[in-house]
Image (cartoon, rainbow over all chains, first blue to last red; front, top):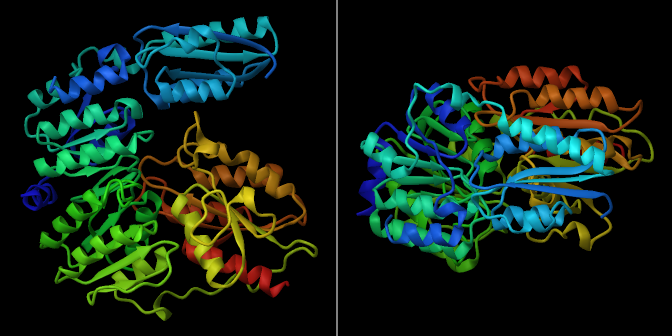
Length: 59
Length: 500
């Protein structure tokens, strides 16, 4: 299964969600790639363990 | 450490690391300031600040979502002034604030809702949060590229196992370079499309190979980064195997190149077995590894240059350059080559070239068989200036070449140094003029009768910095510019041989 999904990534135009350094989004935009920048702040009030736990719980 | 330490913590205040590094440099450059850093208060960052003697109780109590200002000054007046300047920098309006018309989602979930066709998340948040964001991405069906480093290897392995189950590719953590379907991601170069696919566990290795493929007249289908630790036994090459599967199935890829540090035997066996199952020819570059048995469809090479050459179906003679090293003279009494590299794999490749010629090297990032810097006295030092000891709390030298100023100036003034060997890496993400910057340092600090300088430029004519312009700037500054990093190392060897 994994082959086909990654293979599909190689066949389709990239559409990127950028989380972090805005410069990466700007350079993708310059290349004509659809990119959406997340206005990210550390989740769970910056508690890394809680953030990790929340991501495992799917929130 | 002496001086007055001042901390201020801003609860729940986030700025990205590039902006904070810029501010940190501004504050550290103020009168009377010994050291300064503005960082998010993640555990990894607090350790860096603590090691730099910048934390007192207030800073120590900060959390990952807090911004910490740490200042060490020679006196209270300087510290207070720097704190005031720090506050002013943080309070200045950002472009984002001024751009109120553009609404931005605040979470990955909201972003995917807004753009449900998204297929890749590019993650460069602090390493302590990167896995959490990547997990959210793969669970929404997105492939991910994790630029962030400082991720626990057990977390990396767990994430990749889950991603594999979901059929999602995880490139990284610490993945600096990828080219997917013609799009350069993070630190990558504009190379022509072609039929050579690259799987790279090494960012600058992938850059050098892809740029040389372009230089040799061919092109790249995709360059899939996997992160520097993917071939460690703990991770088991999960992403590498998925990338090989994908390139094997990709009709646009006719040849597969794999670039990595030497993996341990069992991981290498697993990867090579998968390569052997493919009908496509492959080139394997485990940089620094000894010769080993390969599947029938694979050729082992020992340098990045040869990886590109073999993938392009060229002979040694086709890519031979006139050896400028043999024709130069170096100052009597000087015998050391000092390699000052921004690219880790370029540093490794120089060690490979020296080792093959039986010239001893030492390095802070040694390949197998080369002693580490602190364990040997002799040998030509090959320094990877992107390693943690040079970059903790600072930008990478590919982003900010001033990180290597001190070591370049030191080498220029050291009467033992016969040759300075350096790399310039251009492309997306990189500094906008590394050669111009380097030339400026040589002009300001170069000494009459000082070391010979040999360099190469990893990049292409289509890159924003334009390779030929970068080369011309180096040549104008008296630098001998080699066509590849491997040639630069070979020229340095010739220079000391012919003058020995």
